Image (cartoon, rainbow, N blue to C red; front, side, top):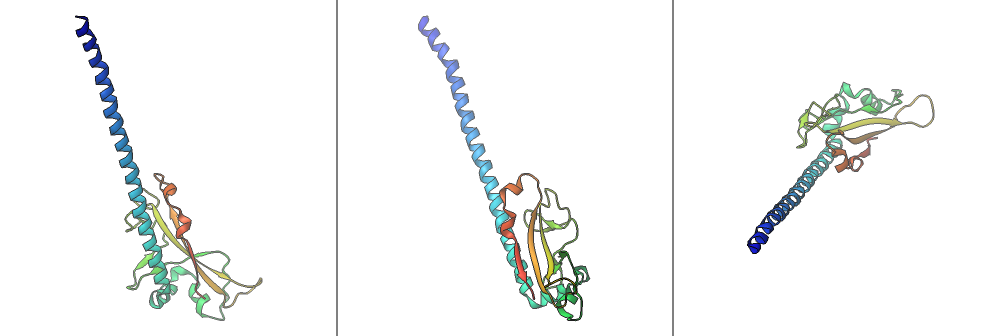
Length: 184
């Protein structure tokens, strides 16, 4: 009798130990899966961001895409600053620069709310979970001395902006996708 009672009393602790072990294994694999999922999303985003920057720089180096973009009225006085030596390019702050691709459609759209999805398709709900990335192009001039500014050096700055949603800002360093191009 006493032997049976001691065996019966061991079954309950063994079942509890087995349940704890199964829960621990499940918890470990679940966490490992979630870490891998986050890392996969980061790698997908990094690859897409690199492609976006490379494509943007290529379009800025394309004579057709650049010249067509430079003439857009949404780019302010950029065209006059670039081509008219008699134009006083007295622009004191950075200005938006919309960039067209080779077929004439907007590639980098500086309209408020425009951005990119996690799969880098264009979207119009930035900042949101569905539209967490925005790539901004700004142009500015550099003149020597105060007063009038004729035929200045012109620059275009590319900058990645990430919505502060879901910890995405902590996964990707936006500064590593910034660039500065001197166009004249």
